[in-house]
Image 1 (cartoon, rainbow, N blue to C red):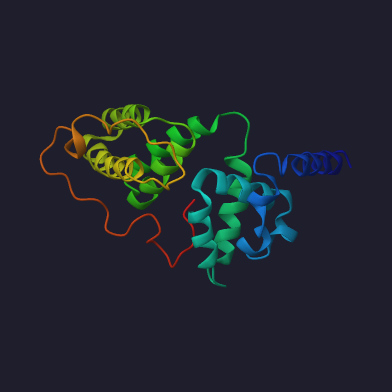
Image 2 (image 1 turned 90 degrees about the vertical axis):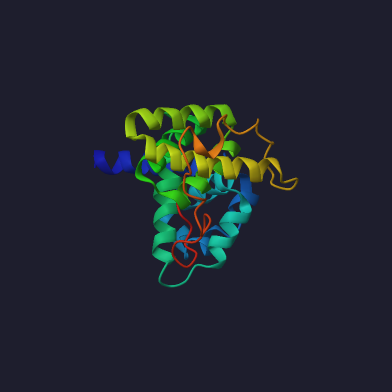
Length: 206
């Protein structure tokens, strides 16, 4: 009984939290976006969709939602409820700090499409180009120069795109990290061919 009461209390707290970050507009269409999970996932789905839109932007999320199929709907539900509704919504770290951790992990693992997506997200979460530069320099020491070299090339491309876009919805960052895409090496690979949405047929990457 005590365990049931604790679980009920947690659900109540989540319901109170649900719209705090994004409001009703940010969560509109939430149940369709996660394959009808609002009924099953409750507050986590609603909160997750709000946070997901705030971090990744409406354009990206709308594109992912539009491409959802019966095959990819469970994955949409998973990342919306757990990645965004639970982990990204925890109070222990700021969103900027979570972006730093995410960039580090993606650069180290050479998850290039995800890295491009999350460089944009990091800018939306308040990181500057200089802070992204520092994260990638740290990656070079602890995860290897080749991984950081590739990450610098990707990050520089995104920073240039954002700086040159008048309708990106983001504040133009400072100049890209010094040294350019080379990061002190000769001829890094070019930018990833597919862009941030080119993995599966449009399920959104977390």
